[in-house]
Every structure is written in C-alpha cells, then in structure tokens.
Figure 1 (cartoon, rainbow, N blue to C red):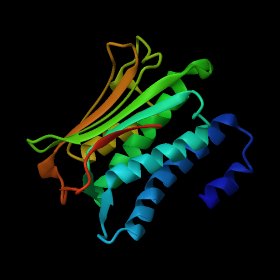
Figure 2 (cartoon, rainbow, N blue to C red; figure 1 turned 135 degrees about the vertical axis):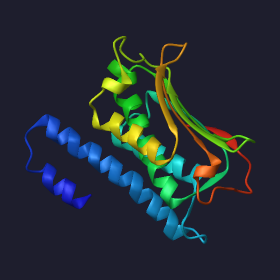
Figure 3 (cartoon, one colour; figure 1 turned 90 degrees about the horizontal axis):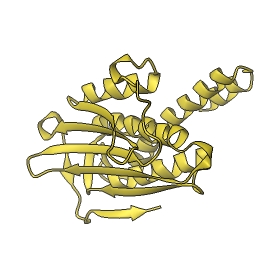
Amino acid sequence: MSLLNSQSAFLQNDAALVAIRDSQHRVQAISLIHKKLYQSDNVGVINMPHYIHELVDYLLDCFDAGRNVRFRINVAPIRLDVSQAVPIGLILNEAITNSIKYAFPGNREGNIHITFDRSAAGHFTLTVADDGIGLPPDFEPGQSRSLGMSLMEGLSNDLGGHFNIRNTTDGGAEISVWFEDENFIRPELLDRPAGSVNQ
C-alpha cells in the first residue's frame, strides 16, 4: 500500500491514478483476510460474515458513499479456508466497487444487496446486486476488456465455479458466482445464526 501511495505522488495521468487506487483496494481486500487470520484461533480459516462487513465498511469509507448508498447484507455463518477466502474477497471488491462507481450516477440514492449462502446440497452462491441504472444494452461479458471483469471471471474459474453478470428485472445489475462444496478444502459453519444487516 505504501509503495502504491508513493507511486501515485508522481503520477499526473488521471487514468493511471484510478488504476493505482483500484490496485490499493485489491491489496486491502487481501490484507483484511490476513488481519482476520492473525485474530483467529483457527489459523487458516476465515469468518466470512465478519470479513464481508469489514470490506464493505472499508469501501464505503474509500468512496465516501455512505450518504447515498445503503448495503443490505445477508451472509450465512460460513467459514472458508484462506485459499478460497482470498478469491471471494477479490470478487466482492470488484463487484462492490463497480456498483458504487457506476450504478448511481449523479449521487443518486440506491441499495446494494450482498448475499452469500450455502444450500443443503452443498452449493455456495455469492451475489452482489444493485438497484441502479443497470448494464449498457450492448454490454457483452465475454467482450469486456476491463481488468475487473477479467479478474472476477478468472477467480471464479479458480474456485471451480460459474460466473454470471446480468441486468435484473428491476433494472439494476447483478453479479453472481456459484460453486460446489466439493471444490473446497475446508468449508465449515459457525455457531452463530445467519442474519441480515442494514448499513
């Protein structure tokens, strides 16, 4: 993070500065996971509800979006091995950042919904959906050249999962990742109940 901050001080190009800031957010998404490891008695396992709330708080603060964007978070009490928590954290970072930056132009108000659940059949589903302006009519996920889109698709493949992005029936955008229990090393359920938190 310090190296990226130092580099940004010498940049005059706006696009380069945005790229540096985006990289800082990705580094922080990983850093939060390692912070959780140091705080945990079970080394190598991440409490996902706690992690996701901290990541959301960090991104809200970075973009100063708390006044016009509300988060509705519904995360099942899931623990993941760090090797799976890192790609999930990076996917979340990209999806949330896209919604904050593009879904609500002109500081319009809106909501971002995050759900992460595990079915009885052993399937995990992560969804980030907003009620913003939605994807452009000509948007083709396979044709997108953005680093963020490539990262989300590649990380989903690393998880042995399926990535999808679409417009919802309400007009907003939705990013989802679906993957199977058997692709994971050590998924667990916590003792605390699942819940929905509004921020």
